Each structure stands twice: as structure tokens, then as C-alpha cells.
Image 1 (spheres, rainbow, N blue to C red):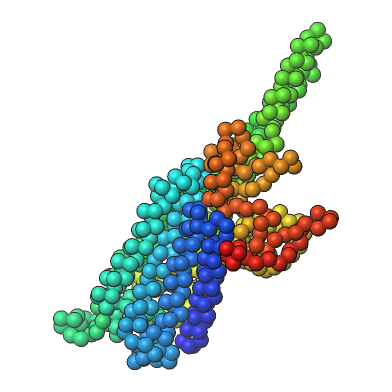
Image 2: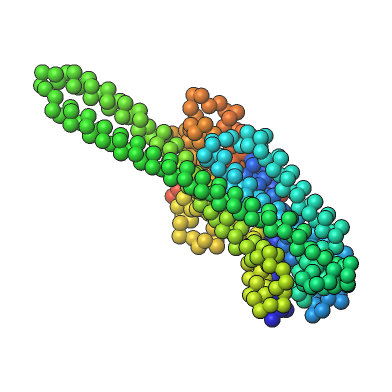
Length: 448
């Protein structure tokens, strides 16, 4: 059973690593690359998962060859420490990047912060902390000898060796209960458990703030719409009951009201409000999905870390299987969430794709390098029937207004990772009937 669970975990980690590598390549190979905070955060999350997955894959082979019941082990202490070092760095950085992503959504949607301001005021320092903290933890673990093989040499983590020796009455001073990693649970408490708990609490708080803001804005929009409709009906009733002697004045008033109503119901303004609300809602949905993936991937390993001395208890088998199934799948969860709004957007942009299976759309996105405009990238490259750009500016105004210059449009387009659908690396050619078809082309990554 242990070998089967180990095989499942290694396969899941391989799948997750492949998914994270794919996301990283998709981001690097797009025309806008790493120019936006959103793409850099997702790229960092992918790199962290690659490191963690690589450590999980290598652990069964890197465990010391004399580890009991470790049929795959062919390494030594040094190789196990290297695998554990990778797992710690990636496994700590990935939750932090999920927290950073939700924080970015909150700043963009609620506080209307521009990507440039976010990068200057927050992003660089947070990136530095995300990586320096687990690196320090890894160095401490190496110095203390905390990285050792777990049961059957399946993983190299911060555990004592022999397993559970720290829970005995002996100490390194009074006996030889622990050869390595005495009280390693204290190190994992500071560098694994506490950061997880803090990040999870902050995630819940930020998600609550984002949820409250989105639905508060939606209520305000609905209230304003009802007020406008009621005012219009009241004006119509007043005009209908006007005196015949005042018909000229009423006509003038009606013309004024009509022009005012037309100005407030400008299709471009209405479209801008719809896009802004769509961005907020999709940001909320993406945040929830990333948090769910975060919870599924890390809650069981943290419980495992937080309850030392359970390696030989019956409940350890349940934890062992849960860790083997869910923990390595973070990268797979991320690529499904990352491409979800892109698949939805492509379906809306190309009507002929509405009836295509999801898997086909997913493949199209992968081969296009993810170079598809989506609302969740905080912008749309939509144009009205007259060819005017309706993309949202960071100020909440549509591009193309008199107060928005071309430089703002260009910089925001680069930040949002936007591109016209005709520029997809898997281009969509337009047929004689107006439908879009897929044609083959080399990826932009190779065109460069």
C-alpha cells in the first residue's frame, strides 16, 4: 500500500510540475511576458510549485539507501537534504504567492490601484520576502540536520531521525534517541505551520473584504438603475398631465430630459460599467478558486506537521493517502484556474467555439501561449461597431475618452496581457461567412 501511495504521489507531482512549467512557458512566451504584476505573481506561483514538485518527485529516490522499507531509496543524507530544501522553499513560497494574488485583486478592484503603483509600492518587497523567508528556513534546517526521510523514505521533510524520536524521554544529552533533527517540529512550527496559519487568516480576511466590496458595488449599481427608471417614469407622468397652455414649455422640458437621459444611458458608459462589474466578479471568483486550491493542497500536510508523533498511529494512514493525492496537485489546480477565464472569453469572442468541448478549448489556449484577452487580466480589448476602443482605464474610464492618451492605453494593454484575437499564436482566421476558424501557426515564443 505504501508503494502504491508513493506511486500516486510521484505521478501527481509529475503532472503538477508539467502544468506549472506549461504556465511559466505560456507567460514568458506571450507578447507582454512578465510586464504585469498579475503575470509575475502567477509566474512566481508556478516556479514555487515546480520546486516543490521536483522535491516530491526526487524524495523517494533521494532518501538514504538504508532507510527501512524504502524500496526506491538510493541516495544519502545529502541528497535527501537537497530534496527537502526544495520542498520547503516551494511549499512555503506557493501559499505566500496565493496570498499576494488575492491582495493584488483587492488593491486593483477595491482601491483602484494601478499596476505601476502596485509594483512600485508593494510588489518588489513582497517578492523579496516570499523567497528570502523559506531560504533562511532551509538554511536553518540544513544546519540543524532537520531534513530527513519520512516513513518508508517517501518524502524528505523536517522530521527527526529515527522517526518520532523527539517524543521519547531521551535527549541528545541523556541518550541517543535522535541521531538527527532533534525537535525538528519546532523548526517546522516557525517556518511552515505559523506562516501557513497567518497566510490563511489573511487570505480569509482579504477575501471577505473583496466579497463585501463587489456586492456593495453591485447593490449601488442596482439602486442607481432603479432610481433612474423611477425618475424617468415620474418625468413621463408629469409631462402627460401638463396643461395644454404650457405645451411649449413642456416640450422644451421633455427635450431636455430626453437629452439628459440619452447622455446618462450612453452605450459606452454602460459598457464600461458592465466591464468593471465583470472584472470585479471574476476577480472574486478567481480568488475563491485559488484559495480552494490552496486549502486542498496544503491543509493536510500542515496537519501532518502540526501533529508530530503520529507516524505509526492508524490515522497516519489516512493522512498519508490524503497527502499523496492532494498535496502534489497544486500546479494542476493552478493551470485549470488560470485558463478558466481565458476559455470563457474565447468562447464569447468566437461563436463557433460555443459547442466545442472544454478540453479542445483548453488545448487551444495552451498552444496559443495563453495570449487571449480576458476580463480577469483587468482589461478588455473590445471595440464597438465603429471601431472605438472600450477598454477600461485604471481610473475606471473607458479608453478613447478625451482625457486618456495613447501612452496610457499602450502601457495598460501591456500590463493586462491584452492582444487582439487575430494575433493569437493559434490564429483564428475569418471565413467568408464571418465565422472564425483555427489555423496553424508557430508560437510567438519561437517566432522571437
